[in-house]
Image (spheres, helix red, strand yellow):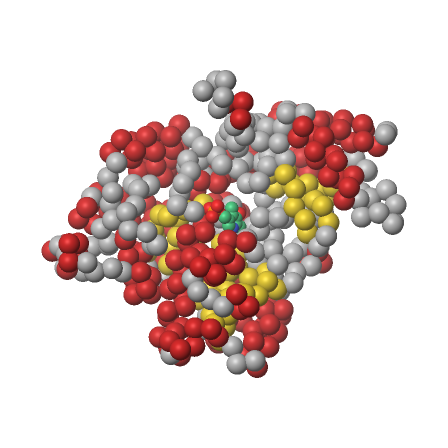
Length: 419
Ligand SMILES: *Cc1c(COP(=O)(O)O)cnc(C)c1O
């Protein structure tokens, strides 16, 4: 282990890990994972482990309430939530439900006409899931965004794209709006986008994989304003909510649309509980049949730390990112690429001349910083621009780590500039 494995590990739990998005773990999350692994129940339907299903429904309603999701997304309001492995699964699940809902309405011979929308910042998982769900490869729209609107999807651009498709005989089916895109944490304006999609009976999914967790804080809840008009919402509790991998929480307003698409009815699974229609059979809410007991993990995180501590945990990361941003701003060689909204800062060295895009220099800087082995940041390409991303969110990160990281970046910048 010490000789062969640890040296080959990327240390996601290091307090100086600022790459990608965090994978914040916790003792409670770890204990929950261990218990669920030890119990090793399979939980495909209610009867196969009633407590697993009941706890999952309870926890999903609990977290949904803390996020101030409209009642329609909760079991107490005829909606409901399910814990999947990853966001990709949430996307595939909802794409299949959206596809069938539309085809039931317009006829199953029109599969090739359905169109899926996102922006050019939408996670690549959407296109992959659309492909696997059988949407025609040419019917995926990555609508262009620009720096002038901080890379958020503009309702006007969506409307134009949708109307153009309709003129060409196509059928708008699904929109993925993102709250906190992977490259720059752009926030698509959920309410205004839903206003556009309403007329076309499209399914709107909100991908809040990273920033969705922050919506438990009242001051950040505005990020999902308009969620009441969407069909589904998901976040990764394994990203920024202290819940060890994997745990994607998906809420839907109309669970029946999932069940209609994804249910199975083998005779060997028949049982009185399912027949009573009074229980949830989660196998009908997801791609796979067998499933893990993830609820124990998230329940232990919520119970052990409490919602107010979790809020403060997220806030502390936002404050640290704010600090990092101030440090970047104070050094005139650098620039902030897009305004920070929560805990990720996108920055770069300003190009030295007007003829240079500065990409090579920034790429060198990032390589040099990461090769030091003292911290880890990652990059994104937006509109041809190489951007360095500093995402604060590891469980053990403190302000000192952020300050140290910035000093390290400055030192490597000095070395590059003096060459
Ligand atoms: C991380 C991320 C994803 C992919 O999440 P998985 O759980 O790995 O499938 C999708 N969308 C956004 C916005 C993300 O940040």
